[in-house]
Length: 128
Image (cartoon, rainbow, N blue to C red; front, side, top):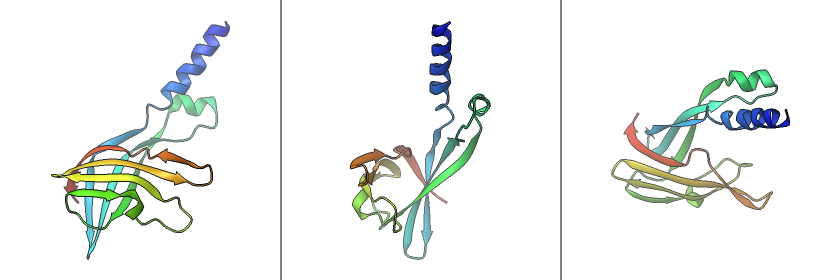
């Protein structure tokens, strides 16, 4: 009986992460002389009871990253501006021939650790 309960708990824990998915297209947004990259994906709602875990509802989410230019090359995380009160980025964005490689981390100075973004990965860059 204990094995069954343990199996169910592990199954629910592992399956609760299946709803998160990054879409493989990143959008270039231009506003005057400013450039932004918009990443989109699906995220799972937080569960507060066993019924929510089983339903596994999701929602569309996005992250907009301001970048200094749209040239091929590396954008260091430290060069990406963030709003006051938010953790700064570490890592990098690499743009190469309309392919974007995201490898960014939050610089969590409170806990003294780098936390990877759930948006890390490879994307095809397209104009919005």
